[in-house]
Image (tube, rainbow over all chains, first blue to last red):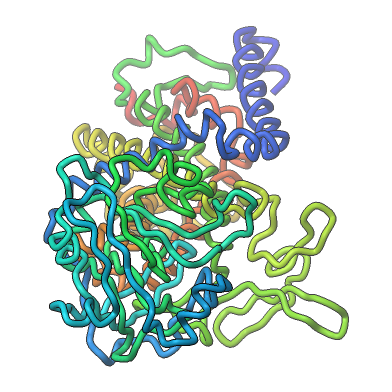
Amino acid sequence: MLTERKRNPSRPTRRGLLVGIAATAGTAVLAGCDQLDMVAQQGSWFRDRVLHLGEDFNRTVQRFFLNPNSLAHEFTDADISTDFKANGSTDPDDPAYRAMAANGFADWKLEVGGLVEKPMSFSLADLRAMPSRTQITRHDCVEGWSCIGKWTGVPLALVLEKVGVKPQGRYVMFTCADMLEQTLDGTGRYYETLGFEDAYHPQTILAYDMNGETLTVPHGAPLRVRVERQLGYKMAKYVMKIDIIDDYSSVSRGNGGFWEDRGYDWYAGI
Amino acid sequence: MSVTSSANLPLVPGGRVLIRRHTLLVRITHWINVVCILFLVMSGLQIFNATPALYLGQKADFAHPVASLTAQNSQQGPIGITQIGGARFNTTGVLGLSTYDGEPAARGFPGWITLPSYQDLATGRRWHFFFAWLFVINGAVYLVASLANRHIWQDLVPTGAELRAIPSSILHHLQLRFAHVREYNVLQKLAYLIIVVAVLPLIVLAGMTMSPGLDSAFPWLVHVFFGRQTARTIHFILATTIVLFVVVHVVMVLVSGVWNNLRSMVTGRYAVEAESEPHVD
């Protein structure tokens, strides 16, 4: 090899270049892990402007391929999970919620307001008296696991029709009873927002029954959202209030949901 | 990348001649792929750590994972257990239980190999989807161009005669005897071909199958991969396959003339033995 170097003076430079590239890459990887942790931290420009392009692509491409009526696969009773995992809050400690739970949610009312023609409130009996939909679907958690459950509830579209959404409305916001994180400013309360593509989807229901029985507290009693084409964190449990809003940037920490405020994607289709 | 005239080719010592081996497209897409795979594997392990277990079918049978990395208590204190099927291994310090910031932490894969190093699924997903799209676009450019210019047919698909020579090629590899010619040997051809036309496209499809949105747009996806949890397991196995391929690939690059190989993938120029270059005409 050395004799080659002597006879061909152009080779050392090229070799030097290659060594340089390899050394730079190696150093970048070894020393860079801490930098990579830093550069992608929440609130960083790189995270919000560059890495966020991946989420933008996911949303744009899925919106292109998903038509309003593409349905999530529906299963049979034989497929239902016997060990459906209850994630996030499983027993809210809010005193008002606990009092309602102790009373079988007889005093619970779903408030529906915001940018609507006619704000209304619904008791569980009111919701159960409305047309219902039952679906056996796969629940996909962002953590990677899936469970299959049977859900019965009123299509969200029917509730929205009753209150009349004003033209300037753009999102449906769910406010929940559970504080998933203890914070001084109240931003630990669970909430979620959906766009109208998903809010009016035929499989988007406000579920009060699971597997043929009244929804239990670990799974979100008395009412939880089912949004079958998105991940589990979009499907708020313990829903107390629905608001039609035109913008979520002034709500809580401004990203459209509890987990979105903690760095997760607003569009949770993947 | 056919060689037209040996007269114009720069001679290098030792009776060797520099030929053009890799097209600009192959070189650029190769190095973009290197970066993508590095980031995808590290962020993928972060995502895996959110549920450090693999299942089969549509739903997770939590009590019976096909494989899992867990931390458990033992008489000697906490230990890391790797379970694959019925087999259990003590992998304390690396898998299941590892040290992070000086403290023992219950984690599937250890912090030094995940991105970010600390447990943060949301940020892992940000990295993963960014590089997943770069990887998909880069791979699509490579595949479309390589089908159009017949690179895959001419350079990667082995001939019948080459396939029959697999045993001797294995022997040459074991002896670390490598002919420096323009063509890939048959084992190289098969490895590259399987990776670019099967493993890489399939890992993208298996990843897409984990998306509830895409499953409703393309219901066939979830059938092809036998359910979302199986798709996740296949995604992991294919990623492992890619890592093993990279390890073997790098070793072969190192033992078969590292500078010549690296130069050919950077500048395109590759030194071959002049007399053994049959395509010079």
